[in-house]
Length: 161
Image (tube, rainbow, N blue to C red; front, side, top):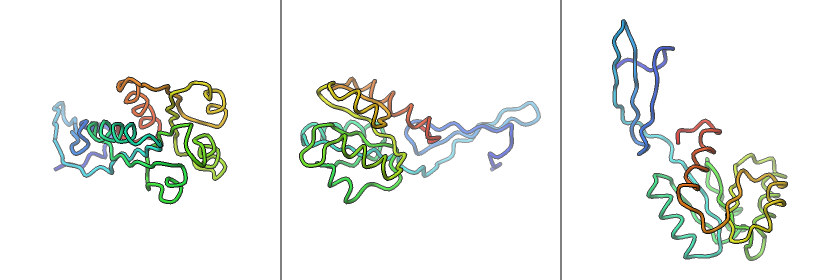
């Protein structure tokens, strides 16, 4: 099978994250090869102390093809952050270290990991944006809004969405 490295070749990732279509144009003909590709999972970390909400969000993200990992506190996230995470979805009001404190900690450590603040109260929006969050969403969040936000983050990071 030809390699998709030429300028006239395109790769299109198919949404289920296991397949890609390689399109090759040669001598006026167009060929499409469906290729199984073990893409690295798009890991999303969810830090929220509400166990029911966290579990529901993890299920929804996994149904969309994300490898979602949940944490009940900022401290638990810092103890074992997932390698290669696409982003962190973070609640503001957490026991112990707050979500904004975790965001500031990540920025102080020069971590460019995108952080989506998702909270039931919008009173922290200005502080979150000043601290460097990538997006600020108020619960309840429509799933299409969340998925669009994650897609934008993936596109900005160069990973397939």
